[in-house]
Amino acid sequence: MSLADACLVRLSEMHPSAEVFTLDSDFRIYRRHGNKVIPVRIPD
Image (tube, rainbow, N blue to C red; front, side, top):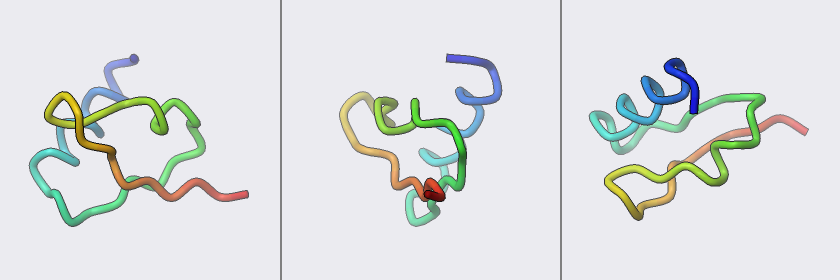
């Protein structure tokens, strides 16, 4: 996980209703608070 990815994960913890818009498919693996899926929007 890069520093930028870690910052987005932390921001998703601080703002639980927000989605992360990214081209990085690693966000399907990352979890917030240890076990909760991060809502992501990845374009096709």
